[in-house]
Every structure is written in C-alpha cells, then in structure tokens.
Length: 311
Image 1 (cartoon, rainbow, N blue to C red):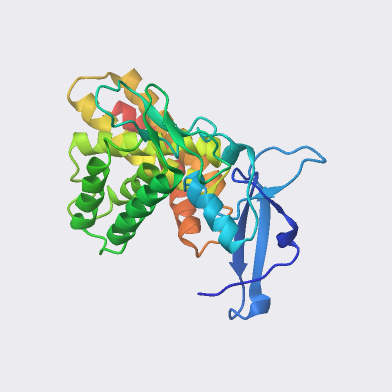
Image 2: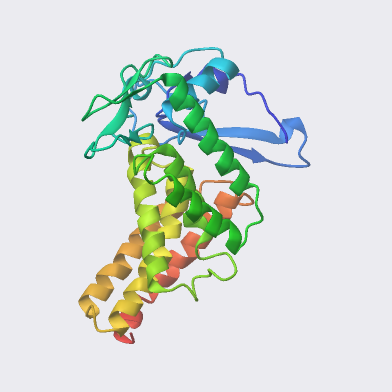
C-alpha cells in the first residue's frame, strides 16, 4: 500500500459530513512524482464557504469515529453530526431498547461528545454505560471484519445476511453496521455465482432495491452531493429496477406506461451515476463503473422506445 502526503490538501478542515471529494491519479511509472490528488466540490459552494474533508469513514458510528480521530489524528471532533445523538436523524449510532415491555424505545447517548456518557432509552428508564456501547460496537465490527475476509462467494452473502438477522433486535434499522452490511450486499447481489442478475428471483431483486434505497437515505445526509459511494449505489440500483419492471410487465401487473416510468427511473440513476464516477481515474474500480454506467445510459436511452414497444 502506498501512502502519500499532500501538504496543500492537509490544510483542509475536518468534518464528519464533508463537502468535497478527492481522487488520486497516477501517471507514468508510479513514482512519487506521478501521484496527483484532485479535489472537487461535492455540493454547490459559494465564495467564502469553508471546505471540509472527512478524515474518517463516514459510515462509522460517532463513538468509533471520534475514537479513531482521537487516536490517529489527535483531536476531538465536535462537529454538528458528532454533537447530535441521532447523527442528523440518520440514527447511525442508535440501538433498540431490549428491555421487556418497552414498546418502540431506542437507546441514544445523553451526550454524544462524551464517550463515557450514559445512554438512555427514549421510552423507558433503561440505561447503558458508554463503555458497554463501545464493546457492543467493537464486537459487531469484529464479526463484520470476519465476514469481509471470506472469499466472495455465495457463503459470504449468506454470512452477511445471517449477521444482519442476528442484530435485528439490537440495532436501529438505520444503524451504521447495518449500513456497512447493506453496502456489501448491494454490490454482491447480481455479481456472485449463484446470485447473478439473470438468475435472481424477484424477491432478491426487491432485496437489492431495498438495500440500495436504504443506503441512499443515509448517503443523502452523510455524504451529500457527488460522492463516489452515491455513484456506485445508484449504478447498483438501476439493474434490479429494470429486471423487476420487466417481470411485472410480463405478469400483467403493470402496463406499458408504468414500464416506461420504471425504465426512466433507471435512466436517471445511470445518468447521475455516470456524471459522478466518470470523473474518477479510468483505471480505478469507480472509474470503470462510471464507464459502464455511461454505456448503459446511452444504450437504454437510445433504445427506450423500442424496449417499451417490444416488451
């Protein structure tokens, strides 16, 4: 692994919700002089706006992000996201209350800028120590690391889904660790042998759509604008929408007008995915997805009328 130091980029302030994105390009033979970093605004910016980069992974919960920044970057993050126990309404750190007879209560930190602060249920008197929450998150992260280390095959999909089910009664539906699992699953369904797009049943097309939509809900808040992850997930979302629409039409569930609307939805996803990812280095994974999105967008747009007419 190559680590690069870019002194000019290092002046950027940190925020757990960044407003810029960056790409590293390499030219020539890969000597240090060949590596260049390009910064782009992820959102519309006005003159005088402060530029923020995220020094940590945006899909981690607050207690883990702040620990990483404290130990690796030597500062305490007090950004708006870290200061909000709900993480700007995304509930990336939230747990379910498991106390008997508690109806729909969730566990939130009483002070998310204090890692030792008590966590309390919103509906009952149940409380947990900050250290207990950290242990829970560390345990789940270790289990995710184990499944991430597995070969990328059908067993890896099943292991992730099993982990998802295991913590369904513990974590809020939008918790960070569910989001991490969703990101993996969304990219595996449709690609892994036995789970390719041409053999998936409708229930797994629906599962892939659900995964992508749930990821995008959090990306809209935590990585707003033109982020690589948004581009990737939009690309992943277009295919199951098309496949489901085709099957629904063939089974007389929707008519040609609704079929066209679904295909237009897929076209819009491909358009934005292409716009985002085509800016990445062409030999990078994201760049290659961007090229695939561009090609699929052009083909689907050019053949839309024919596809609907001959459906």
